[in-house]
Length: 67
Image 1: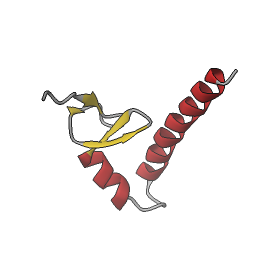
Image 2: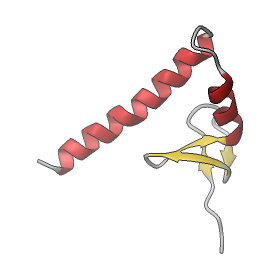
Image 3: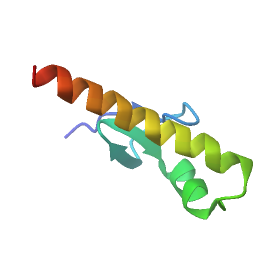
Image 4: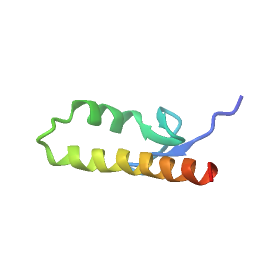
């Protein structure tokens, strides 16, 4: 079986490892950084905005499908 590669939404690396969130990949390295980032660190806001964008896109798509 051939595994499909994806581009990480945060670092842009192409990989098969990581987690999928609404069809978007967060690579293993960024996942670990996200988990270990403290709320008061500047990187936290970047991760937060990236995840928010995924959910906003999903909500918009879902609402269009339900029209």
